[in-house]
Image 1 (cartoon, rainbow, N blue to C red):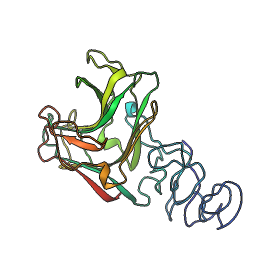
Image 2 (cartoon, one colour):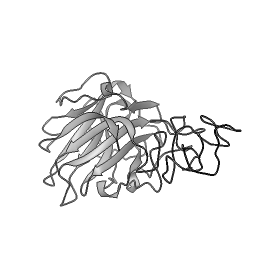
Image 3 (cartoon, rainbow, N blue to C red):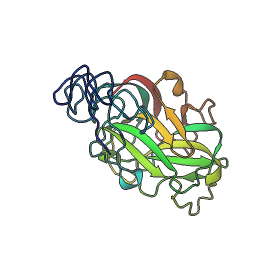
Length: 275
């Protein structure tokens, strides 16, 4: 991961005009002035950068940040060293973002869990080696439990990562990457060539104490091959009404089926201001 230059203040590579590869101005990888800073913070950040990652694609430009904004991989526990929220200002606790999904899950017992789903318009082949699902998340309250991406086929067979990131290990905005192509299907019976749902699971096990409610903000969910991108920057990208059957439009929705969400009082909403 590379940290980019940018920001609206600071010193170093600055100026409001200048040379090389600029954002709104500035020298080298500068923004509107500044060094390697956001708006007064320390890390990645601010407005305008060259090659910075955008809201959901870590390779294309956004509103600021670095040339990449990913954290650690989902299978390794996912704690970002200096991940920050690339493309949206500041590192970790940097500038507030605009628009994301808010997942609120009251965890009270080891059997509690909640599923949040995107139903694809057409089945996707996620069987190729190296196919990766990326989940950008910020854990606000999560002293116990795990968070992970998962997939399902048309028969609702379920597959998730063998190594599940602990909620308590996530600091600031992180990107959790899961190599679904390499994940053994084992006895799940899943057909990776025909995936119809991509979801997010928050689960109490294996912990014994939890935050109640556990609160997680989600910026985006994406797949690299085939290229699928689901940013949650606008209210229409999230359905606040829980359902036990697929919701159209490739929006994020809460699956209220009895085998999917067992944590009573689970809520999914869209908020205009994020951490």
